[in-house]
Length: 219
Image 1 (tube, one colour):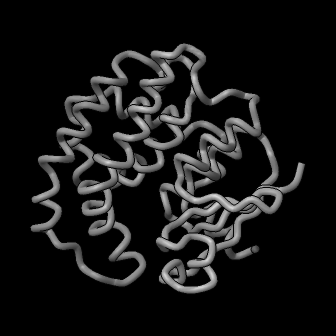
Image 2: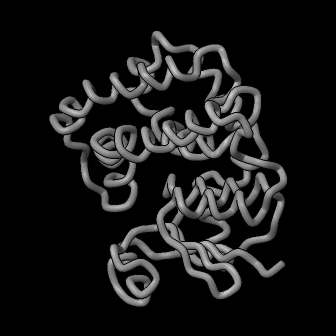
């Protein structure tokens, strides 16, 4: 099977979703790093006309949008399966993947994580505390709902890791060291235990920000 090529950058939770999925599948891949800001210029715009990451290349096939990439990988690499066979569990997986994109990221991670992590680390900018405070009510609503949906399960798909986990956990992990993590999870020990469980997986140990930065340097 030809090598999978992932165009992404260290620190991207969406890029980590793709890389961790490939790790779960146990297949070889190459990371072609995108420099900060280069995703909005050529040649990357020829891969992704909306200037986002990641992009997957496989045997001449170019694909963007993380959900599409994850589902493609699960179809072309059927073992181990990362979508539950049960229709209701599969629907829940789809639902959580959409929660990740539309609610956990939009208006929450892209504000709080950006202000606390991305802007200071990459651009030396101080956090905008007012923007963070304004995002916290939505953050609480999202974390409350994720905790409810997880319940007493090991993973969002039940006893098996699914694409839902590979979507949500990279976003959630960026919150773990922030001042907001404790208030967001104070009533949700299941989310803390869940994240510890995901971070202990080989696929997540192999795709930390630091590890991906090493891969980017070696590329």
